[in-house]
Length: 430
Image 1 (tube, rainbow, N blue to C red):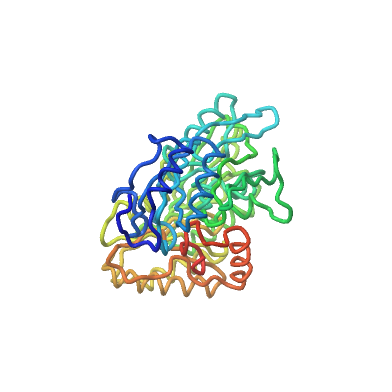
Image 2: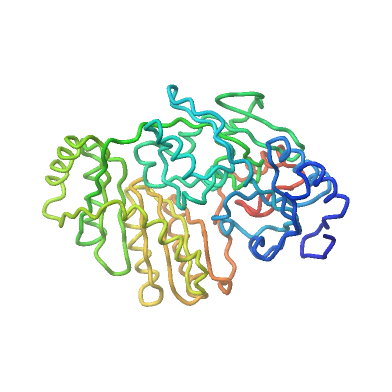
């Protein structure tokens, strides 16, 4: 495994032998082209079977000066900037246990490699759920969802991941297993690790387990869609619903090419509650067209990311955020920027977080993304590129890092001083 690659370090036979002693020979293999990340080709893939094994392998790589790419289900490896270097893929595939489901206390402790679908199926046996709708639940892992801060439409009612997670364990590059929050084994004074690790793209430590607060499954659910005249009418309707007494769980607007925007509302209650909520909504949305499309509309975000992820050479997807009261402004800016040049689709939650999917020539896509980012950042929002054509002129995935960058770099230096984990992939080249 001494084959030369583009990374600055070489995985030596000595490293491989030491790693085999930790995880056994069947759980380490040469990396192949499918393991590449952002054009960087790793040399070896290692699958530890326990938190301690993972911490030991990570320390081994850190001591050898190797760059480590943590990987869960691999569904979002394209997110973020290409790594500056990539030597070792550290997979959490075998860390897939649900450690403790304290159903009476509404908490669950789960290893990072467990899929969202597996977790939800286990929780459902006690009529419970983790109230978040991941993009690809059959493949998305707990660690990957946390690292990319992938919340979804249920965030409106139940909060973001940072609200749902109450404890986390990280393997740090020096081999430490550090815990913070609920079910604590070892505290790391001064750091709120659950919040630090959420959305950090695996640049501070490798998540090995997490503790979540969970919620009861709803008795019934119903989705109502309202066809609106234009994005301004959709904005007014969303704000009216938010200002009402409705107890909705999710609310979004879909803007598909030049079609009229549609506002989707999710209710979760008893059958009697659904009837009452629907009647109240009817009085708010009239005279807008009122339909009952079923839960499929909540897959819109998945469809937009997936269309770009499949490798279309003329397709890009980005995660956007904007103040909820500025959603219409953002969509009008997108229409102006893309008019006649780029086909556009978007779905934006009432929280102001959404996905934009663009189709067009690579150079024009880059220009459109850059222009939209400038508009959003000027209004206090952001745009993070998730997928783009290989031929598209290179743009930073994250955009302007803001005033927090020095603090973020200081935290990175404290937890990962040798820049071992996902080097260069995060905001500001962290």
